[in-house]
Length: 545
Image (cartoon, rainbow, N blue to C red):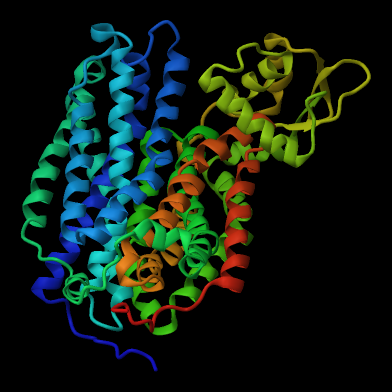
C-alpha cells in the first residue's frame, strides 16, 4: 500500500535539518568551481615554471585526484557513520573538507618551497576527496531519516539544489574580485581569496550542525541494539546486500553521474573551448539555464514520491542517451553559426595512418591524454602536430585512411589538399573555408542556446532529484550510510567526475567535436538497461527496517 502523502509545509525543525545537511554540498560545488576556474594559476605557481602547459595539465590531473579517492572516503566515513552516528560523522567530514579548501589559499608556492608545494597541494586534494566521500551519504541519510513517510523524495531533493548555490557563490566571489583587482594583483595573490573565504562557510556550517540531534531512525536502532558491528562486511561481502550495491551503481548512479557532469560541466567546456564562446558569456548562459532548471529538482523529487523513483530516473537516462547528439549539434548552430556553416561547406579530413576504428580511437584518446599528463608520452609525431594545430585553431576534423601520395594529407572541403604537416600551408588551405577563431557574440542565438542548456539541465534534475531518496530506501538502516555512499561516489566520482577528461580527450584525438558524447551516451544507456532490468522501486519501502 502506498505511503500517505503529507502535503503540509516544512516545519522549523525539518528546515534546519535540510539546511544544515545541504551546506556540505554547497561547499563541494563551491570548491569544484573555484578550483576548476583558477587551475590556470596553479600551473604557474605550484609546478615547475619551465613548462606552463605541463603545469596546467598537472593541475587538471590533480583536480581529478579528488574524484578518484571519493569511494575510499565513502568506505571510511560510511563505516563510522553506521557505527557511531550520522550527525558526528558528517560534522567531521565538513570540517576536513572546509579546512582543506581554505588551506589551498594559504599554501606557499613553488618558488618558495620547491617540490613541497605540489606535494602539499596533493595532500589537501586527497583529504578533501576523502571527506567528500562521506559527506553526501551522511547528508542524504540524515535528511531522509528525518522526513515523514511519503515525502522523502521532496525533502532530499533540496540537497541537490545546493549545487546551483555553490556555482553562483563561486561565480560571485571570482567575478567580484576580477572586477575590483588588477589582472597582475589577481594572478599574484588575489586568486587565494576565494579559497580563504570558505573558512566563513566552514564556521557557519559547524555552528549550525552542532545544533542538530542524531537521526531518530538511527537513534532508535541503536537503542534496540540492532546496529551492525561490521558495516563493510555486511555491506559488500554478503550477497544479500552486495547485489543491491551493484544494482545501484550500474542501474542508477553511473548514469546519474554522467548525465550530471555532461549537463552542467562538459557543456560549459563545449561552449568555451570547442565553440569558442568567451568565458564570461559561456558562464552567463549556463548560469541562466541553472536558474531555470534548479526548481525541477524539487518538482521531480516530489513527483517521485507519487509515481516512484525508478520511472523518473530511467526516463532521464533514455532522454539523455537519445538526444545528446542533436542537442549539442543545436548548440553549435545557435552559439557559433559560422563554425556550423564552415563544417558543412568545407569539412576538414586528415588522411593518416593514425585512422582506427571507434574502440581504438577511444582507448587511444584516453591513453594519449593521460600519457602526456604523467609524462609517459613525450615525442610528438607528425599527426600529433597536425591534430594539435587543428585543435588549437578550433577546427573540427575527421580522421580517414591514408592516401597513396603521402602518410599525412589534409583535405579541406574536397577542394584543397596539403601533403605532410606545415603550419603555413595548413593556414593557407584553411583560410578560405571560413572557420572562425572565436564565436561572434552578435550572432549567438541566446534564447535558443539557453533553451537547449535548460533541456540538458532538466535531464540532470530528473536523474538527480530522486537519487538520494532512492539510495536511502534501498538499504537497511544498520548499514545504510556505508552501502549507499560507495555506489554514489563511484558513479559520480569515477564515471561522472572523469567525464570531462575522457570526453575532451576523445574530441582532441579524433577531431570530431561530438565524439566525446559517446562516453556519456554509452554509460546512460547502460544504466537505462541495467535499471530497467534490475532496479526495484523503493518509494514505499520502510526505512526503519
